[in-house]
Image 1 (cartoon, helix red, strand yellow):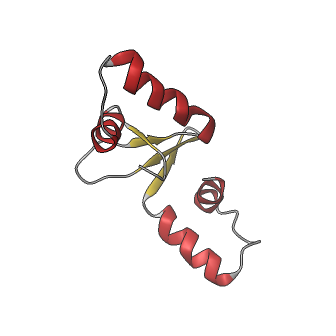
Image 2: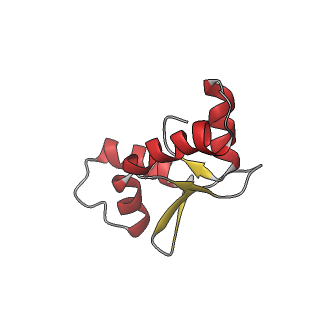
Image 3: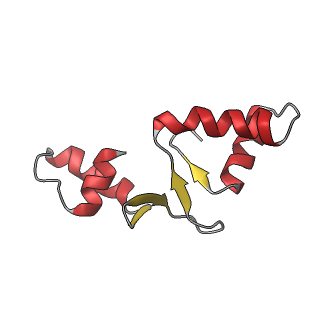
Length: 90
């Protein structure tokens, strides 16, 4: 995620050409608002990108704390996305 933030801020001078192309392509699908990284989506609102330290908390709260019943992997991921969160494995 930090490389995407760097690309959005224009700090990509240290990357090789092939890495730069990949990162710039990924960065076109993201936006940086007030220092917070969001993923753009056509059919959904902006999805807030979570740091890896917060992913487990959001998953646990969605799975156990808020909904109180067992969710399968796909349904759990859909609920997290509806809460407007995102991280790469989703």
